[in-house]
Amino acid sequence: MPDLAAPARAGQRVGTLAPPGAALPDFPWDLLAPYAERARAHPDGIVDLSIGTPVDPTPDVARNALSAAANAPGYPTTIGTPALREAVAGWLARRFGISGVDPATSVLPTVGSKELVALLPTLLGAPRGSRVLHPPLAYPTYDVGARLAGAVPEPCPDLGDVDPAGVSLLWLNSPSNPTGAVMRPEELRRAVEWGRANGVVVVSDECYLEFGWDAEPRSVLHPDVRNGSFDGVLTVHSLSKRSNLAGYRAGFVVGDPALVGALLEVRKHAGLIVPAPVQAAMTAALGDDAHVDEQRARYLDRRARLRPALEAAGFRIDASTAGLYLWASDGSDCWSAVARLAERGVLVAPGVFYGAAGAQHVRVALTATDERVDAAVERLAGSR
Image 1 (tube, rainbow, N blue to C red):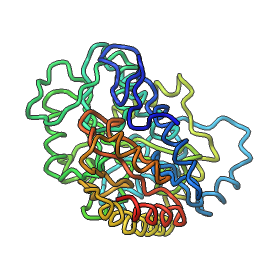
Image 2: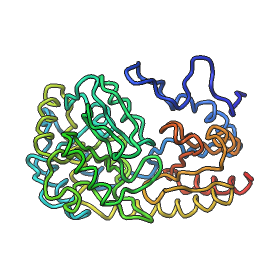
Image 3: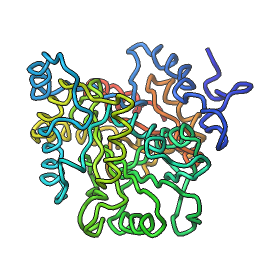
């Protein structure tokens, strides 16, 4: 069996991205393989709380719409159907009080959200060598996207300490992946104002916006945040978790019409198009709140079981006021905690996958079946 407490080998980077300007980093999840192998050896099988892949059924409203649109011999439009763009604008207004979104100019479907995150600096023409700011604990694709564009990724703990020279793009993420932290409206507002004052595009990743637990997430497009204008601001959204459409690759971007228009022109040339049946499924899913409320209830119930079980096993839960993850620490190095839980058949993600500041945390996903969550709770009870 591999030494699960010491995963590093010669030439291997563990949870540390390559230096700015260097080649792309190792794919971090490959480093978790020996721990997954150990967890799978548990007599009752693995409880995988690492990646966060949806496990609940795709709602009938989306499946039926996909099936009805399956006869699609022609090419779909890159900009998306009018019905889809109107559904996005309606959803933003209905669920989050975001008014004034023009479906014709401010909405663009994407092939999931990850491809947009990875390609956005390139698609927007970020200059080579420019700086792309992102949270110090963050989805690794913000970093990768900057490198793909020849830009320099830069963790940004506090905008007040940042010299804006050479900055082309600022990433926000609320609710946060991995921590579940929620930015206050005044924090979002300051970021928008800073971006406009310095000619920096502000992009907010809001894929978990409908999953607020102890805090109510606010979109950067809310009128109180954007100060009446969409200028210089984009938001990224996904239907993967809220509608269990991860397998459909269904996402969209909303915001500044000039920026959306620029993205549209490049995407038309590149053939980055959401398939027509998927667009139909997205339209139906965005028009139906009932299945999202049901999914929220599932995740809330799993959170209510996993959190006290982790705490009883000696973990402290930090942030985690929203989103689909618990940001947990037992005070040890994250790889030691991963190894400890793998011995119990529970797989979690080491915090250093998301930045050096996560060295003593693990990310625990709520995306497991009720039966597997019950199994995790039982195993955690014997992990002290």
